[in-house]
Each structure stands twice: as structure tokens, then as C-alpha cells.
Length: 162
Image 1 (tube, helix red, strand yellow):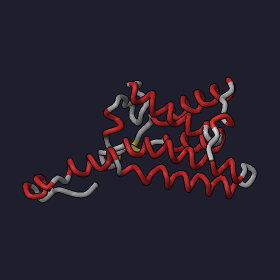
Image 2: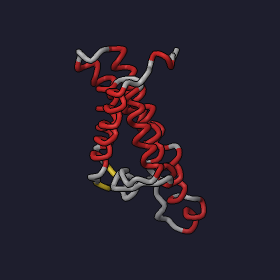
Image 3: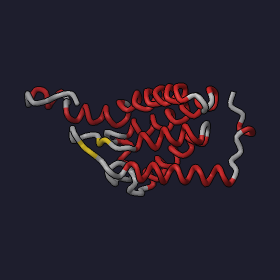
Image 4: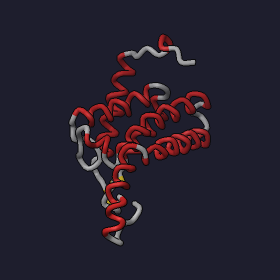
């Protein structure tokens, strides 16, 4: 059970959260867009580094702060995007899943320890699965319905699932 009294942030914890938030922002800026909808970045590396090094719950707090700064409007998202519309776009589910994925990865790394690279890698793979699973929820589902709505299917044969 989660006990909030156990997790009191020290000034060192807060500084590390800010550093990993900034690292994630820097890793998200260079993008490669293949399909035209979702960019490919190193942002996930920032999520998993924060979770693996900071652990639970501070890795998740770093990713949550990153998402909050994007929602507030700072252009630190993939490709320099920011604002509330990022959460409703094609990458919104990925960002929200990144918070949960970082929490899961941090918890597993804390539970299994950081000395065995295999277990740390396995924790990151599990966290990546959690991160990418909800990416179809808020944003990607909206992009799918925009591209392949029933009216566009009947009007055009070029509708494709993305």
C-alpha cells in the first residue's frame, strides 16, 4: 500500500526531478517523422532513465512534471510542440502512458535492485509496454477516426488505418 509519509521529497530529490525533466525535454526536440502523425524521438529514453535512476515515485514525478510543462504551453514536446492540444493529439496517450510507465519501471527497479543489468533491462521493457499501450487512447484514437471516419470511407477509397 502506498504511504505518502514514506515518500517525502528532499531538496536533492526535487533537483533531480527537475534535471531529468530537462533531460527529457532536450531528448524530445530532435524528431524523425515517418508516418506524418507521430514523431519518433528519444523522449522515451528520458522517461526510462528517470525511472531507472530516480526510482519510484520520483521518476514518475519527473515525467508528470514534463507533461505538465507541455500542457501549460512550453514548447518542449516532440518537435517543439506545447499546449493542451498535445494531449488530444496523436501523442497524447503516449505522454499519459509515460507517467504510468515511469512509475511501474521505477517501482520494479526499486523492488528488484539496480545491481543486475538484466533485471533493470526487464523493468524497462515492462515499463515501455505500459507506456506504449495507452498511446491508442486519447490522441491516437482521435487521429484514427479523423483519417478513417465512416464518411471518409464512403467518399474515398484512400482511407487507411494509421
